[in-house]
Amino acid sequence: MPDVCAELLEVTAALFHTRGMKINLAVPLIASVLALGGCTVVPPQPAPAAQGGAAAPQPKPQLPVPQPRPAPPPAPAPRADAASWRDLPQTPGMWTYAAEPTGSVVRFGQPGAGSLILIRCNRTRPAIELQRAGFGASPVPATISTSSTQRRLTATPAGTSTAPNAAIPFEIAFSVRDPLLDAIAFSRGRFMLEMGGVQTLVLPVWSELGRVIEDCRQPG
Image (cartoon, rainbow, N blue to C red; front, top):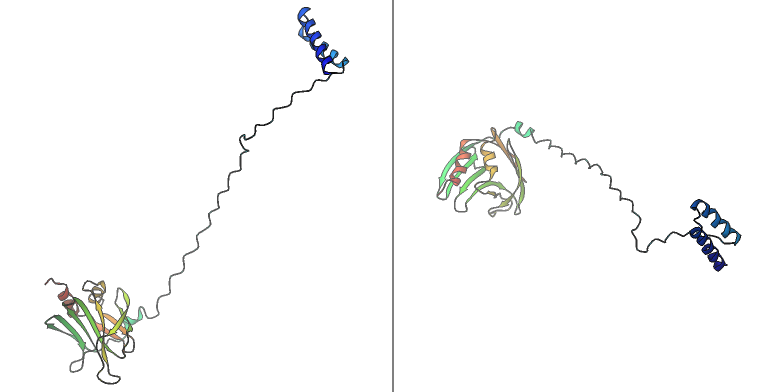
């Protein structure tokens, strides 16, 4: 059957060229001839997509939705005694200044009694040494409070006991440029020393404190 259809098409085409048949008449004639011959025209199939061609576009990834930042933790509540220490009664006594071979020292206490605290300029280290009598053979916590700052420190034993349960000096050493020394010297009227195992001292701010500090800061 395909050969017959091909022959019919060739004959019809020859008539079109030799007889000068118009195109609008040739098309129906070709269709009629093919129908009589039982021929069918198969429409061309679309070419298959080439393998390895461009892949279908992928959907764009969704950007993560920004999450709100957690609220910062609340500031720690101030200590109940952070301001009230300024209202505590001042420790009785006075400051006295003295020169020493290695620098100078100021002592605080009542006349005729032993010193409660001393602050020494030790140029041989060099350092500013704060000493307070205490008990025990292990370091103890200490805190110095001024009108502008507060710092927690550690006081270490600086001597040995000569009798059971006798007091020994405990020491806190500062570098000569430590800003806490300036905070003490310029505190408004007073500063406070707390140390484990002994009474808290609320001490007046006198010029002798600044003098002993400056002694250690002077060259030579």
